[in-house]
Image (cartoon, rainbow, N blue to C red; front, side, top):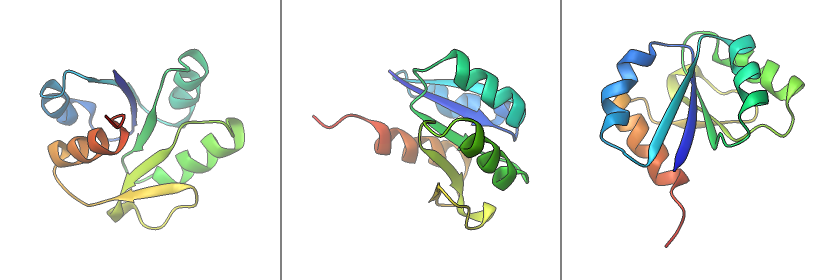
Length: 107
């Protein structure tokens, strides 16, 4: 099971994409503070997907407060953000598909 924390954006837009991936569980966070709280409570989060206009600020706060945080990803439209791997700008389904491929264990 892959657990992904989606921060910002509209989580309901991602729901159909995640429904097609039974091996992917999504947690939603409204912003940086909510994301930090969820990261502190759930150490099984495999990656953080940064959505929305404040992606750079959320990444900065996560980096400062939780240096051991899982990898951070954001669509390329968010711009170059330190410690954040860019994903292709695409529909939510394609973003989820790309993350599932990246995070799926080899084998």
